[in-house]
Image (tube, rainbow, N blue to C red; front, side, top):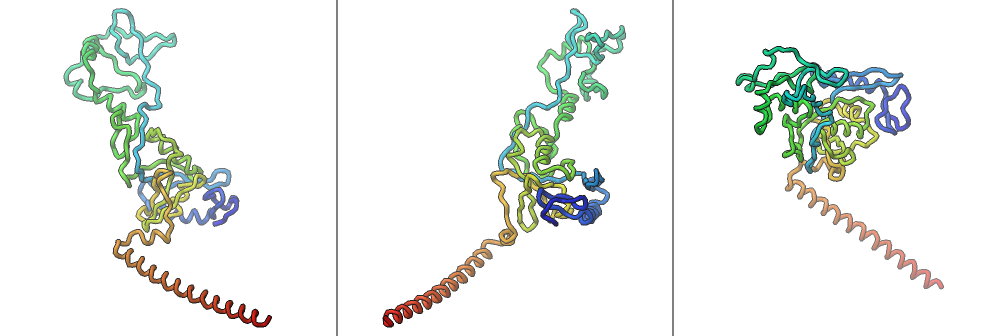
Length: 319
């Protein structure tokens, strides 16, 4: 790796580091062989002489505090269709609007305006894939039924779920909008090697409609040994994933709070998995070694002090 700016034969790892393109391609080949036949294989291409890698990046939840999910989706609400005339009930129709802004009048087809039967109400409502924002045409009887206190129908539930991603298969409403994901549970986002840590964080939070800002979080590479390294804002998480190898048993990328997460160096991480009695024995040995060093230094400086005093006495006698 080099610390200066990366030429065309190099791929940037961060603002100040780069790696040879050929070396990265070899690591990428190993990565894809490990994930052969799976959706986690990465693709690469050349853009103006620069190597660009793209694919799915696994990120594990490592939060200690709850996050707040948005109550509303970013999509525009379904448009309301005006009444056909004063005598018709105010039901939404599936017919598209004319250019003049008025609803297209359907022909006298009684079969299309029949009341909903019990079999219709038991299954999901039919949806028009081309105009998913509009509900199907309903008769007067259907509108009368809807005047009662409404319960969410299976069709409405399905449409609501389409608007929002789930965390571990669960969809959140206003009662569970404040939520702490299970520690170690994994999600993924589709990124490329030109996206920085901050951009990947923004993409992940946007995917799950999280209200908290990306500045409140950080990405950490957590090794099997317990070593923990924070990815800087200028680093590229997908490149880092390839450099650390394909196996998530050896290294995983975690999303953590920026103020609660802390880096654990390798020298400290090697002691994390030991039991307390073993650690206590290590501490006792370190104390014994420390005491020996103290005695050795004390004797050394006492000898130096005695030598200096003897020399001072000699100088006084010489005068």
